[in-house]
Image 1 (cartoon, one colour):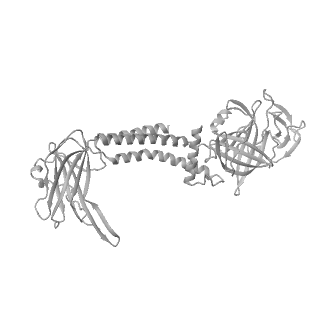
Image 2: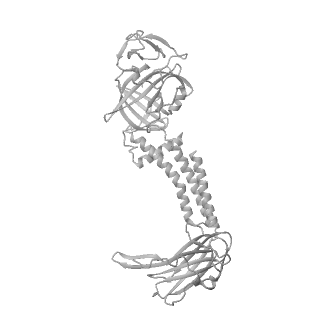
Image 3: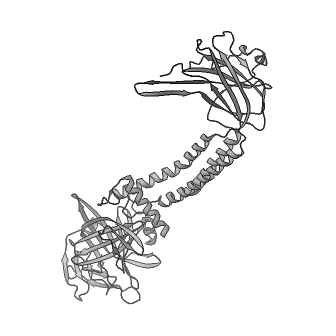
Length: 452
Length: 61
């Protein structure tokens, strides 16, 4: 893209001329500003600065083969300024034998000058010429412009394949420019080099719907395909805000945990040591004294500590409400084994075991205990402790996980978006597609978001 | 929209945790038996736990 300054302020100049090649009528909308104008009938590229419209080039093409999505002469408001579409070109690059084409529209306003729209696979950019040079880094992998860092995305040679309308530079079909795109979504800065001349432009991603609305075009814009180089991630702001909220909720959860551990009574209501003689025979089951669970409905934790050594004891427990006959049945094994073998010392199990009974109403309770063990074991001593209103750490762990999952999902989706973006890049750095580089890219975009 | 959804979601998670702690919920499940006769207290052998036939672990390494 090359640029030229506008004429002094005033109404659009529209002048009708005839093509010297075919005699067809030409409509020149930016008279005095266009450098070349293309005849729609015979595809002659004419010198708009020459009063006799000298033919500079002729090319063979049918206008219908690639009609502009926004017809020439369409007028629409961009950033509050009325522009008219006066030119259209298709550019093509070859990558590994595959042609990729995009479209560029030249817009003109008599006081504001030229502006451009580009379209590729339904992705639009609103482009204007840079008035100040960006600062390129030493390796030209990044540049900075107005305090914002842009990363090199691709470099290629683009050939003009089709032109129509008016252009503020000496356009030719077949003209080749070397361009580089540096991105900082939603913006892209492009350099176009022809010979020794370099033109810098800045584009901002626009939705097709906004373009359609601005130019009052009928129907719907073509749906975007894939992820474009400077397409803003729909999730980059969500990632930031959700992680912020996650942090707040995790702090609240921690505060809740501290509060629960501070306020829950963890009250011991029963403790007794028993002996079980495995060789005694007879009925092993027995009941304990009655103990009272006070306060509200709460959990009850029963801990069994047994003097087992390379041995086991199994206890059938029933916590029975003396008044209602409501009972809770459960069994716990306490076993502890240890030894030494060719791998060294080993151990298995523990000498104590705890179980939590959920939501036990207050009342008078007793335990029915039925111990079992190896009949040849002899005497086993074990202690039973009952506590009520014991904090459950597992809930806080699950809650932390539940809070992290949405943030993780949004981050993963954002990473996938960036992965798709950088998969189209020619450059392995910074977006080589690896998780680390993509995370770096996202962090960079979040930082850019902060700066805005 | 995502932020509002997550804000509500986070509040629900915290509320459920607070309620679970208050009501004494647990991830453990135990069998509940209704109307255990009072005679169990005098004759513990008359009641058999559902776990009495449990085949427990009896060995070490």
